[in-house]
Length: 169
Image (tube, rainbow, N blue to C red):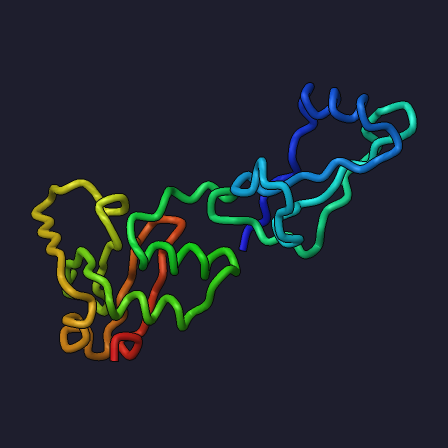
């Protein structure tokens, strides 16, 4: 999982520091901005503010777990994309992805090789062209087609996932 970047020191942050000398200013995951009491894993770190109200340094929170929003994922279009994003960010696991996949409809096209490419929503579907024929099908219906092949979800995206056919069994 890619960690989110250290928050930038903005003029607004410097102003807050001037008003709070000798304290710490916490940097919160963007998905929790404005939350009064965010969970500890949603705090990316803290800026130390000296007695003059100047920012001294940033201390990273080793327990910070960036949200999909902080990492720039698009808004999920369905339960499968929620499960994939949660797994990709450490907020969920493989079992959640498998369960969501079994209950989902996906866009699929068999490419004649050892993989079946599929997309979780229109958001990830490539442009039509070159004879592409994407069809929305229940993911469970692909199990017999896959046999010993792999299912590749959202190829070429941040949410690309290669799964063995057994995941649909």
